[in-house]
Amino acid sequence: MSFFVLLALALAPGIAIGLYIYLKDKHEPEPIGLLLTSFIYGGASTIVTFAVSWPLDFIVTLSDTDVVHQFMNAFFKVALIEEFSKFLFIRFILYYNKNFNEPFDGIVYSVMVSMGFATLENILYVFQFGITTGILRMFTAVPAHATFAVLMGYYLGKAKFTHRQEIGYSILALGVATLFHGAYDYFLFISFIPGIWLGAFVSLIVALILSRKAIRLHQQASPFINSGNPEARGNQKV
Image (tube, rainbow, N blue to C red; front, side):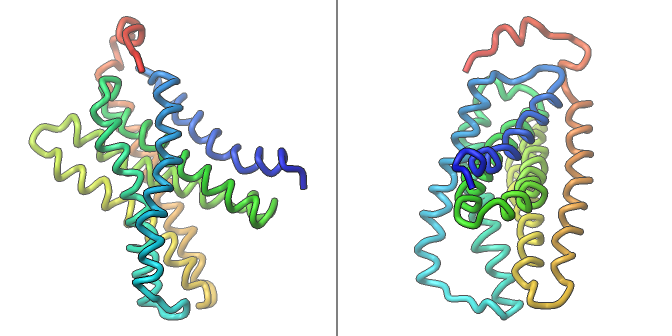
């Protein structure tokens, strides 16, 4: 298979989802340069994930056929570490950018970081396992990362613009993303139980439904919804 075909297959879903979220940001779109920077942060978050996960692989030994061990693996060794790695860049860098000026921006920046993470991960998987894996992940793993990000971003948007509840909503943002990520992975990790893998798709569908609702709620909460604020757009800088 051609290098460029595999690369295009690996890049396409993350870019498509990033573009979709950008177009959903109807009232005050974010600067393209900052979105690209967010995407790069997502790639960098994989380094954080690796830095934490690699030593844990030597310290913690889990059985591949034990449902309790795989629960720990899915929710803590994978979901919590990956979501926390992304959360660091969103909550402690992008959160304080002056362009993060409405609740929907929490979703935008979370998705861009998550798509950077998922795209780099996708490249590694596609070049290792080939086109079939790329097609499967296009409709499963990459959209799953996007839904986790929308849910995280929804609560980070509330954290920034809801007075006196910033810490609580920030913790909830990480917790909800980890919960859905962990559930999705757990059902796949214990697929040695016949039919249990269907639980992963159920959790993904639930996350998709909640993500659509989260997007709609933050669109409706935009302070720019009736202003047509061209001046604010013109003043945006990376």
